[in-house]
Image (cartoon, rainbow, N blue to C red):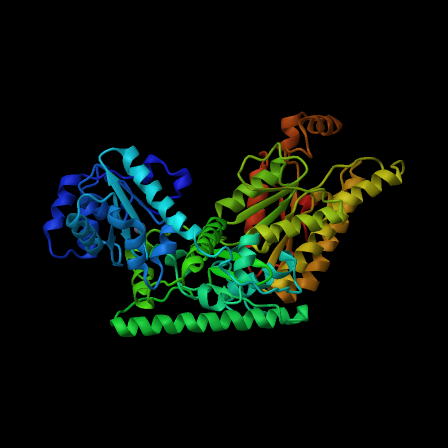
Length: 612
Ligand SMILES: [Zn+2]
């Protein structure tokens, strides 16, 4: 339970001993704790995760093969005012009908009772929930499932072609990179924009944005307010999307400057509604529960599309997937009638059921979960090490480069020439579309240019400045724009070089551009600090990488009359400094919340290059 079916492994399908679980069907009632205890103690492998809350429904049905799904077409016909009659009409004698009951022992028991009333059925329709089919061989059970869904689809095909009467909506802000960061910032800070206060790096959310004709037809519908707020398609979805999505209608906003106020207001209203739903339910049920956060997980924007929100990119994609499946369910339902979901009391029981919450991963407590980091030069040795270290801390990673040969992780890769401003702008737009915004930038790309200053051509010097100075300026400009839209601070990190403070022979073209970049770092630190955006740098030296190749090491070593390994260990510690050491300096600066305009030197110790 809780696994992605696209990549589920045997470990996600924990086997249990069947006979002891079947015995439970003779009991009148079983508490959740007893049910979990009983299921867990009958695991064949004690290290398995806890099996699904629907295990007992599978166990009680006498067939060898039991299939269960929450198929969209089935939900379109069950989620109706007259769902029960409609299903009887559509499926006739082939399927039994089970009224809505929360998953668990009671549902398993009721499922069995309905089956026993007519053991000839191919399966059971669970109102407002899904469908079971069963047989003594896998193929037949699977075919019953497909047949029943096809019958439901056929019924839906007889309905209206256009379920939603659309109105034309055109928000002024069409560009996702202008809108997503505003929404993300408001959701991260729960409506409170952060000024000089320390920013909590945790609890940030990732936004997945989607636009298709089907989504637009839905969000531009005249009755969006009614059908989108009717509630989840199947109870299980509530833990990932909450019962209601937020509608963000921006079509009346004419000035982009007013978008922020409108988003803040809308999110605030959403949160107040959620909080009062929580208060109402705990009061009615006399329960002591801790409220979950009240930030929306699905946002519908007429004229624009939808956003899925989650603690990780994966969670945001799941929320968006559920939103699309919700749209399909509602479309089907509205084509033949009116979509109707559960009452809020039933939804609350599932949302705040500990056994459902257990499906959500609890491992998301690393310090940078929900933070988006973009790394230029991310395809090289050092870039790859930086990506790896940030990823280990839970951050979502985008790597920008022209060549990803040195990049091993499954990061969001963007082909980008950092010396081309249009290219950089595009890359940052893609990051906003993919993650909703940006929190940390490691401007790491650089290239070595050498030569004695009295001989070096202007062309070489200008080329060095393009990559070793101007690219940093372009990257920071784009990043600051997004971070200011978000309004929740940020961290800009630059890979400078010891050459910026301690010139090496013939390294002028490189070092002078890097010295300008060091000044750039300090200037930005001063200018964007008041927005909570911290700017810092790392000065690495003698790190084996694509920039300092083996060949280059040999030539620099021989120029100094030492061998390559002596050259690499020529520092106070007397040992080679690695790409990982540089990466750890970057993560350290990203986590050091009161550190600004600092240069972390990573060179094993070299007093001549030490900053005073
Ligand atoms: Zn189910």
